[in-house]
Length: 452
Image (cartoon, rainbow, N blue to C red):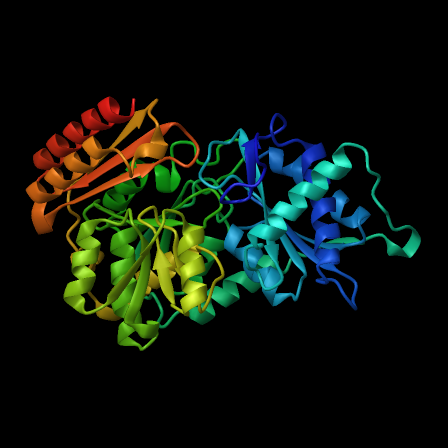
């Protein structure tokens, strides 16, 4: 698997890359590293452990729980809950560590392990590096120091977690959803119970699809990566809007009453205006990545809202928000972070806030989302090239300069080397889709010839 920790924990094919032995070993290593860092000083440590419904999550959860308890950590098993719920409960219950077993929007055979620090925040990179190093050290023979007798961790099921999380979500809402009919696509995932419950208690009439997880069907043709069923269901039921989550419900995309997709950029735009209206948008600023549609940037400029852009990845959005104290940020993919109420992207919270804006304004989502016009965007992946030379090739720089001159103020070019593969992503936005395709195609050809 190379380096174990990626940008979103450890992921791989369950029982092939991500084995029970690896899950157990990483959990023991995490306990030892946090103990060394002083996290457990002066008290008996506690961890919250949750998972999505994947079949592999059952044995991986058992391995994680065994590892933590064997290292002297008491464990609260919260069962199947969204990633943001596990993060929230880690903070709300005063736990020293949170562990979520999920591969998010990935297909069912994959799974992953994500650790949360005290408060429900992502572990610092240096702690992840230390956990990996300690795991490797002991995997190759160095024996663990293990507690015995009363020193071993105790394990209990914490069934109150779902109710506690739903109550938290309802407490965040600025207004109720009475009068709205909403279709929820739960991706047969971790929010299949809590999301419909939250929307119903908030006053909405709820229709659910993709809400029957069986351990094998998570993300299978449904959820935020497959919106066709949601679009059809919104039209069939005459709903006001539809909300789609992914497998661990840390993201949210939407569909308006006409069946048109409302992406993460548009959701951010709607929420930014709503939060500014109630003085909750600190510094009048929203944070997004460089992949956000140019239409979003233009809309924020027009509305007098400052946009701060980061590298691609919700972790970079979150880092910028925490460092500068901003309240709202997210990605086009639907990862939306409302930092006053969540430490990570929360798809259920995002959907509730979006629906609350519709209810509060009595305006359809289609009208609210029209605050920004999505400019046509073309993305071409160019494989088998030297990605390290993207910023230094004279031929490529000249081609980009010419493309930017041609597009003017209503277009944009972004060349981004992949972080994991020998390829370069060519993204072009323009007012006209044919122009975007033409410019992207020409730039892709230059990338091949200049970097191949």
